[in-house]
Length: 593
Image 1: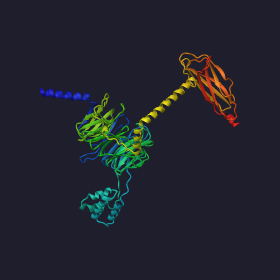
Image 2: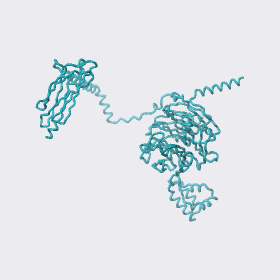
Image 3: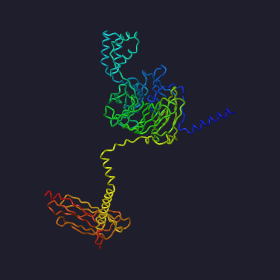
């Protein structure tokens, strides 16, 4: 009876936890036998039928051969053997032609294998590197039997320790052999040409010329030779080559190759380098106190996970924004993007079996997995838009679907004051000029304040006098009386000697028309002549602008101009309602004559 009650209570707790969770448990197979990293997972509509599939670059542990697996739902659709361990997998569009099915790129060893419709399409190999000249000379001497295998080994070891150019694979294999196997190896390989081949360490995609989701993309490769290569999506030629101080292990890109882009590379030396378009070398550098274990770009913030069990946020120029401490070591990281709600967050899988989701430094959600998660991938899978795929350390496969009603709310994150409060400000040192100015202000502070107040009062007085004078003489182009709300605007047209003067008079009242108005012109009669210097204005309907036109003839032949005053008067009153001063232009016709 007690056992029945305990089992019922346990099942009730499980049901309540599932009801409160934001995720639906779609599938869990602890024996899926999938061993991979986040960089070797990709989701894509490989056949153009709207059914998104999961591409896995399986490492093949326990002496098994690495394989390329394609999963549809929980089942494996196809498997293909790989010649070397996979480094990264990515899907991208190569061309604009219909049908627009994405291609699959898998980086393995020194090659990138491109598949279309899950069939081999193209194989790109990294260009060979020049061998070490000293190493080449030693093998030439061994070819002519001038040195014995033991001497060859000693001299190759000396080159490996001191030379900047690393040894070839042939020499490295030779150095691993026992003394009894060296002579046979030399006889077998001394006639071969020494080749030094680098390998791919990381790979991602960069939009070619458009930022659309279905735009053509280029492949960006990071190599063991401390270089970044950008490949053309159609011809697979190298469009750009950039150098780094160390070997890149994580890559993040933004922008378009033909417009402006930014490459961010986390390297083995514990630094993060940021490169921009047309730069062969890094523009910014972020030095970490520990090795990076993940790199994710969220909007314009770079989120870096380190081996010190912490997440760091940086700007694209390398300025540190925040740090969040984790309860366990970070195993892998990836981006969570919920397009329907415009959410971008970081997923971090920890060694204690937790998967934590952060937006900036705020903790949004925690997922408890039955085993430590080694790879993460979020996106459209099958026909579900928001699917989380995880693989565990023991080879298990976990598929969760985000509920459509799920809303991530901040508030379960770190508590207490922000870490920025404990950071000391870099206050600049006090200069001699600053100290002298401080002493002067301290001694004569009262006199300086009184002088400032006096000047301020004089400024206010002059402004008030000018305003009163403008009101009394009606110098404003807008009437200030409530009974006659008028607005005047003048336009002068022509080159001379005859100008067209247009007055736009408007009654700004809401319902009251204006009657009995007159317009008067004041001007120098020796310089200008008007047909009428005084005329009456018709009834002005509220809200309408009335153009009143007249002609002004310039009488001066010396290129002299003057001001014409326009006064709007009320019949029977001497004070104008409003006025406008028109600066007449110089008559170009008179000047030319």
